[in-house]
Length: 431
Ligand SMILES: Cc1cc2nc3c(=O)[nH]c(=O)nc-3n(C[C@H](O)[C@H](O)[C@H](O)COP(=O)(O)OP(=O)(O)OC[C@H]3O[C@@H](n4cnc5c(N)ncnc54)[C@H](O)[C@@H]3O)c2cc1C
Image (tube, rainbow, N blue to C red):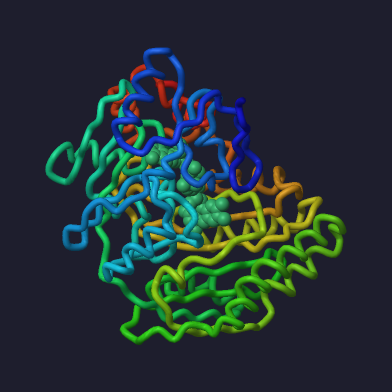
């Protein structure tokens, strides 16, 4: 019997006719070959943590959860099966005294799902996760298996690092890691006005800087993570439970529920929770600092804009929120990352500032997200491929100088559109 699949936020759903759990590349290739011959579509779902319908299909849905092994280690280059979850990967790397150079807020995604949408963390000198890929294996539209690395098929490698599932199914990736490192984490509460007037210096003040701003509030929660040789002195378990589980999840979830039920109370309570002056400082291994549990479910939109545009954009979003007919219960997250050279990377060719807006599941968000998107359009903003947005190939093509390179490769690798779905038809057009 067909079973419905949902994403993490619960805002996307599909009922695939077939669900597959392959264990080897050959099995993936056979599934794709048979589907292509029958004129059916194939998609892979990673951890289902995209807010868009990027991984949805009513035909064949593959989960690579059983393809989760570390295959080889060559110096800092680690080859893994594409279905491995970041959390398991981080642990495997740690046991080999290695780490990924940067990570986002959570570690639940699969490596291929995360890189396919250009998932990123924060750090002006650091690229997104896909920039660490130096080799890959991919099953293309007719079931053929291709391999690419820096020496062979370098063009394929370059483009397929961020493919949004449109070019084929990644079955293996080789990641260029770095020696394991600790981070000195410092969390403070600082005035918004200081953060935006000195935005460039603030974001460059150390390796990884991000801040959270509740529109309407004058203060922000700032996280600064600095690479260090200091030994780990993690937060005691009780403090961690208080801050991460109770503060960031239980209490915050309660605020959101209250806000959804009694919208007029929401702004006051939300400001209290997000800017109470609870400052933290600790040293721990990098992945434990970068990633936190997220149990309060939300919907999210995130845009990459030219770095210097962030202060102006934030000011405009503040005015937009003040005029909305409903409260915003989640803080806005601001991050930064380096430019890269991956054609469909949201940071292609430009150092990027990131502005992410969220809303509690079930609360109204459309007018908020649409208003933010209009502001982002004025900066040629590029939406995160895994997060909500209302763009189409017509509005996006000119924001990516190498759009044509991607389109041509897609036509070569998947001429019949075996990997198509509604999301790709909207954002990339039909092949
Ligand atoms: C709570 C939460 C926190 C988040 N934090 C961040 C963050 O800090 N930074 C950030 O940038 N993003 C963040 N995201 C977004 C998330 O990282 C991306 O949406 C990511 O793509 C999800 O990975 P996944 O494994 O769940 O992939 P899915 O959502 O399942 O799939 C994403 C896309 O990848 C494709 N895909 C998956 N596997 C393969 C494969 N083997 N070969 C080819 N294509 C494949 C799918 O078909 C789909 O198109 C967050 C999301 C949530 C829900």
